[in-house]
Image (cartoon, rainbow, N blue to C red; front, top):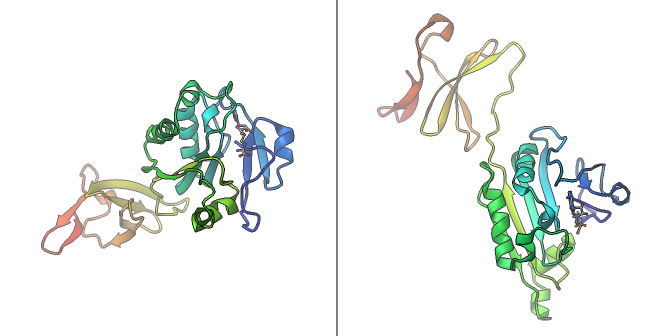
Length: 248
Ligand SMILES: C[S@@+](CC[C@H](N)C(=O)[O-])C[C@H]1O[C@@H](n2cnc3c(N)ncnc32)[C@H](O)[C@@H]1O
């Protein structure tokens, strides 16, 4: 939800910066955008972007205008790669007539809670990390603090308005294997949050995947390949004697 200004630090290079907004002329003046598109997210929330194609999505002083925030947050989640971040930042300024009622009638506290709820509506976002910075009363020590300096450096904090940001990351599990066109995969079972995968084809074998840590280890198999066990099922479990997992 951009316009002609960029808050991204000039000295940092990004592979690709995509802007979205309501006004094509404004977006065309934004020097940081490699590409932009115009869409009223209150009419249509679909983002014409591929799944898991962005490392980060930023929404700056705009969330208060969303009339269908859950649908927009769901789309953001879809386009974020696993571990990608969504940063929603806001202050107390708003176009009164355009903002939703809950935002207009709310306080700083209730607006923070509202954005937390937007994140919580989408299964897969982690618990949001909250940054709250209330204006200093000209306290020179505060103005010199590294946090303020950093926020000013990002162009996100002038020192006059309150600043709130909620940062959440996508906890989508990243599939650990790149399969060749000749290979196929079966999920054989799960135990203690681990998944047993069987690869068929060139790199055939059993793999134990921990979606939380992303680790994937090859398992020695004592079972015949599933081609030989038509009609039978097998999986894996924890073997107390070896303190490890084994197929069964
Ligand atoms: C105050 S501007 C902030 C622009 C930019 N994020 C910035 O910090 O400079 C609010 C922005 O919200 C976006 N916006 C407001 N209503 C919208 C809607 N219905 N659909 C999509 N975007 C909207 C527009 O891009 C508008 O520029």
